[in-house]
Amino acid sequence: MSAEPDYLPADALAEDEPKYLRRQKPVEIRKRKFSRKTWPLYRRVLAAIAAVLTIGLAAYQAGHYFLFSPGVMLESPEQIEIQGSRYVSRDAIAEKFSADLGRSVVRVPLEDRRKAIESLPWVEQAGVQRVLPNRIRVEITERLPVAFLRTAGDVSLVDSHGMILERPSDGEFRFPVVSGIGESMQRELREQRMTSYVQFMKDIELAAPGADDHVSEVDLSDAADLRATLTGLGPASGGAAPVLVHFGDSNFGDRYRMLSENIAQWRSSAGSVDSVDLRFARQVVVNPETRVVTPAVAHSPAHSVPRPAPASPKAAHKRP
Image 1: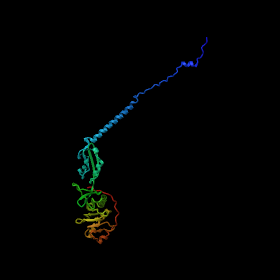
Image 2: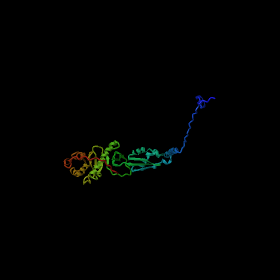
Image 3: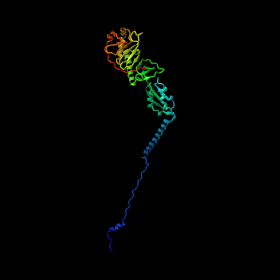
């Protein structure tokens, strides 16, 4: 009997092994979508969405209320509050809001209404604001007249900027009368003439307190020569006639001081003084309109004075 071989052929061994090795399918691990760690993030997102919706709804309701609710409508002129008005009539201001009646106060164009109110002659500056829910507040600064203005037809008032103002029925004013300007003159020119007038009134008051009470009328028709009619000049002026004085365009205070200090002597020399021309550098001409110039006046040391240095101009306002 033959012995079995110690080994097996390779073919025989191969028959015992499986011909195909099956590939193992990887195990799929599913993650939980709603884990404890992700809940805070979802809560924040949901809270933000809810807040946006809430704010949007509130804004819509507020907008609808302020645009269409009867509680915010401007129904009558009585809902317009006016502050700072003394001579500007309430009706004149309320008329500027006539197009807004029946509308929400939110729809009132405040800037347009402010400009419309400032177009009124007596209004120098205006402010307009809403007072919720349904009121409008108007604050105005009125112009300050500084003189009466004599025109061809009537006497009006005028402020330092040359704005011509209608005289109110209930106002009491004590001003000199100015002439030589009118509505036909350009506004810039009127303002220049009135600036000269205001400077004149300030300078003579500084030169002699109470001097503005002696000014009766000021003629501004000549920009280079302010002519003022003065009363009550000198120590014995009870029966003296008014004096027309040519002040030129500068040195008003110095010229007025020279006038008040020498008017008595000029009356004594000339007999009577109806007008005085102070524009010349080294002489004073008395009664130039009647061409009466006495040698004593023209050459007297009291009248031959050096031209004073110009006073520094500075604007002033006189309140009623």
